[in-house]
Length: 311
Ligand code: GYE
Image (cartoon, rainbow, N blue to C red; front, top):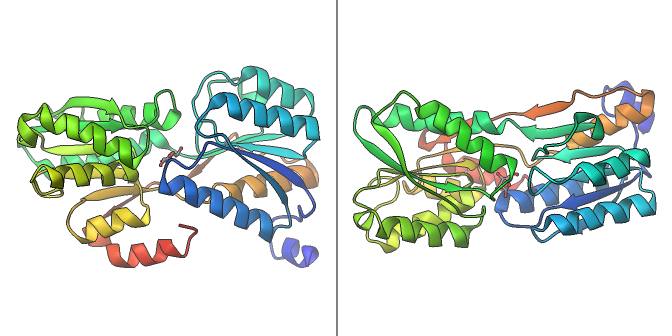
């Protein structure tokens, strides 16, 4: 079978490899799907996946990675919760000659300390979301409230930057309030409630930009509780493309989302397979696609399609 797969142009056989995965936690629907897809990809390839849930804490991730090094795993996948503070533990893996692949978030560390990074272009995601707003508010004045992701994480930093780039030069669009909702539904709702209170009950808010769909779903609930119509009175644009946002889009309660695939492990395993087979160094950054979805893209169909993708 392995030969058949490689002659067909698929990845080389990596069955029997032991690979540690330090996952952040399960703060969002997207992350839960990423975990499910990673397990599925590992199983299909006969990889023995050692899974460690860090419950949102970098110290737990560092501990897990040190544990993987001590066990002598063949490779380590890590979704780094924040960007900084990884140099030492990555150097330890490097020293032990264990390749490390970053999944879905980046780090502020020398590039030679990891084999490759599989992630979306998060600045581009912010730009796509911002451009959607630019294209949909016309010349009217628009105060945007922003729900940021986890403080210090690359998706929060980059999605903010990309959105700001897209609205730059459009003086009618202003970010009036911006705060972290930690990528969770509960926090998104709570912060949105505070935004609504300090914005004339929401009358002064034209749109909410959430760094992920879960926070947008929380915000939608807060907007409804305040007696306003999400999607109409307050536009809602976010990132991830999880099933629940398609339900909201279908109901007219959310306007747009930017998709990133939960299958970051597939390209990671492919890169490791090629590296082990013949020493091929992968690209340092393997970038997945960022696609915009609105009510025009068959939200009900997209919901169904995602339900088959590990969500
Ligand atoms: O968009 C969000 C999650 O790091 C790209 O983390 C990932 C982000 C994703 O919690 O929902």
